[in-house]
Amino acid sequence: MPHVHDLSDFVSDAAYDTLSEEAQTQLKIRVLDSLGCAIGALAGTPVRALRAHLADFGGAGQATLIGGGRTAPDRAALYNSALVRYLDYNDSYLAKGETGHPSDNLGSVMAATEYAGGSGEDLLTALAVAYQVQCRLSDEAPVRDKGFDHTVQGQYAAAAGAAKALGLDPEQTAHAIAISGTAHNALRVTRTGEISHWKGLAYPETGFTATHSAFLAKRGITGPPEVFEGNKGFMHSISGDFELDWSEEDLERVTSTIIKKYNAEIHSQATLEGALELKREHDIDPHAIDEIEIDTFDVAFHIIGGGEEGDKTIVRRKEEADHSLHYMTAVALLDDQVLPAQYDQDRIEAGDVQSLLQKVRVNEEPAYSDRFPDHMVCDVRIHADGKVYETHKEDYEGFHTRPMSWDTVSEKFTRLAEPYTDAALRSDIIGAVQTLETIPATDLFALLAEVETPDGR
Image (cartoon, rainbow, N blue to C red):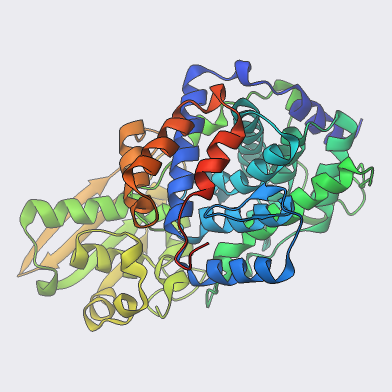
């Protein structure tokens, strides 16, 4: 039997009551965290361009847009996924050779659930499927070092989640996954060198095409059954051989994903927590800093520290700023926080942050690399006023060793959603997510339609 059928059987057999109580709780925490990120992104330049794009092109109004309005399900997946992703504040999963953001799948699952008239429990189950597929493929079939983006695993995950939400049978599910996985293999250049808007839109595009693939399969369109192991398939062309027995998989991987404490690239989180702890403990004046030294693991060094993915002292726009450890550390010390406001264009161009980021030195520490991804080890040394202040970090609040609580995530949601919601609506959304397994999914979607957009509805 082709591997895709093993995967489709896993998707079809998935059931909410097989999740542990902890996994159920963590799924809802991630839905709330993702919705906060989505609402907080409504003013983003590329997000508003997408909104105009959807308004111009139209589409059957079968799925809700966060902030009001309706469109076709695949286009809703594109837009709502872009909202979740744009701030770069949503959750992550760390594998040895891959880092992804499983909550990127929420837009696809929401759109498919609404089209199918599904329940909140259906939404959560489909989302658990997408998390499991993306995370396990990241573990066993990483593609970053081969020049491909982590959205490649997402094509399988988002299609699996959408197929589950649509209630496709195993054969249809296999075709949905095969179409999606064959047709859409993205390049890593999205996140290297000069970073563009596409950094935040690559997975939303994945959500769009994967959801589209699921609907094609629903109509009877077939895909290559040997998408994984066939001649010129995924293994032969991209990943190399790997073993993954889907009959042995559960839906628990969500408990190993991590939530961002700061609005910053995931591998920076422990460094930023350490830098801010030093500043607050020793009352360091950031304007008196002579140098900041950071020893970190290889993935952080190469992606955000000036390694193989480009010079991170050149910061001209948001997409470069939130992938520069130099900028994020500098702005954290200057502003005592890293939130969306730290990526306003005026803040990025300001002389104080541009000057301080040039004083950041990032080094790769092989011993720390060996401990990734189970730990996020780093050292931070701040040279100021003739003294050296130093701290060592193993993790941060939000890492799987120090999970973020429901109350803390609710505070994050409130902070992000406040400009676009009143207190009553925020409370209703939080309550709906907390009880999502007991309500129709449309109850939550109706609340999300009430969110105000910067341009009105």
